[in-house]
Image (tube, rainbow, N blue to C red):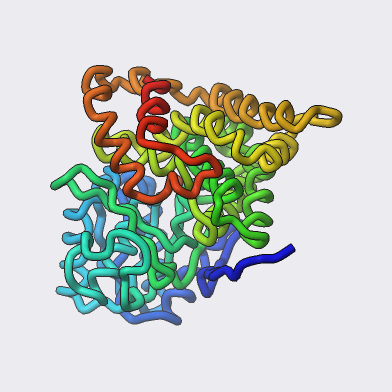
Length: 388
Ligand SMILES: [Fe+2]
């Protein structure tokens, strides 16, 4: 077998497992003296912000807190955080929360060291200088942002979710503590868990996948498929929560070093225009998009079926591959994920109206081009129509 060469980047530090977050003070003290702590309202109200703040302060690191609202991050959130970071002379960022807090922290870091505006860095490899040290502590098992080279920030001026990718924005340390996820209600567990599952599947079927990303992606698919229903059904099931956090971490490492594909490409415009949370719009699109992609990668889909626990022995390849699509659809149904945009309360006429723009934005992001089946603008418009 001949392999191309691949550029694989992981965070310098990954601390994971029960009570991993008790080490945050020690990790922060290695990296700076004054931290900007970025978190959302929900996490603050759960008391996590105070706990983390105390742990960091006890190691002699000062903390300035930036609590943002819980909407997905916009340019305004980043500018407000940047002002606090600069005005207070911070030299370190700590992000605590879901992808929203961690993506905001990465973007604050980009502007802190590179200057300019975020749209200057939209796309891949436009960031020139490393961000300040960043400690990322997820409170969901979903985005994997604590280990990835990506941030997604909405620009309200044109309703575009800007994807910025660079190895220079990978956090210095990821702290994955499953105890911080047990407070997630089932709806959030489902949406964020399916986001992680989508990362694993897309990393695996991506044209940019390679042996190392495949290893992580396959492990994540198996792990998440096995434990997501348990974590959804019994929020305090710490074993299921631990497995989901590890699955999300593996999936993040996989897609950061491979890529996402058509689901994420099509999901971002729905989020940007209709404010649908990232996990929900992914979950809504996942079965339909996988049905579309399947013919381009029958072997991998047959393998996904097996990883998800389907019995594919003796089946022809295409039939085994179909089992994966069926299993994905059933998983979304079991987790009570809405199947249509109208089911999310989005106006049908308005959705129809913006389908051409969404298809253009999806293609412009570059993600659909990584899918195993080429998707034209017409194909993407048709896929959007199938989830109305
Ligand atoms: Fe995602």
